[in-house]
Length: 283
View 1 (cartoon, rainbow, N blue to C red):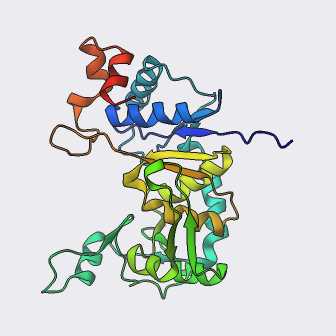
View 2 (view 1 turned 135 degrees about the vertical axis):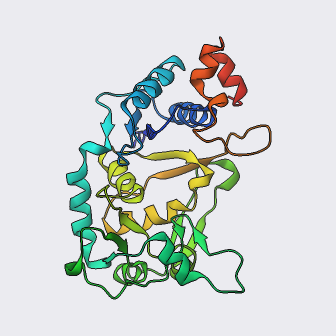
């Protein structure tokens, strides 16, 4: 009889502020969906200007207080630049350097009759200004973008597909090549001063850690298409995805790290228990 496929999940916060109730929900849900001993913590600290050791220490303390336990050692993205460089080298045939700043992109997209600029999961949809450039032309202030049309042509695919683990959005979900080009565009794989991007790092790290179930908020649903494309290009396994509901404040707004009143640390200081937190977030 075939053995049970191990369900291995991770919680991957960026130490740029205190954890809030939304983080607690995501972390606790991820652990509850994993097989015993298969929950991992990953520190996503590629943004070295915003990530602080004191926030990393605080998030570990808050997670432990909630009752979460994880495998050691903890993976830290700032230690893995060589792995991202190897992935970029593999993707180079489908990439180009880009010197455009946000203001340049806004100006290229703007038209007098438009009130809102087209945006996707990677921000404003890039108009392709630098797509003609070669990687041999890369300069120190350039970002690296993926030419998604060229990537699809290489894969000889006309669509991507996945199913969601979350019962309210199982799918199957599909995105065609043309939809990707128009609704997402040429995404950034390496940002200025970082050496990589969230999209590239998370794909490489999930594969390196053997993650079989990615548990994260539904606000990242759109980013999953980018990650699927990178997995195909890099010949990496495709995990299952679970895009869960978001925890919102009383006004219905999604929580952010600046919402200190909803910080786990504040609840702890006010005398709350881990069980109180679970009740607040519906677990």
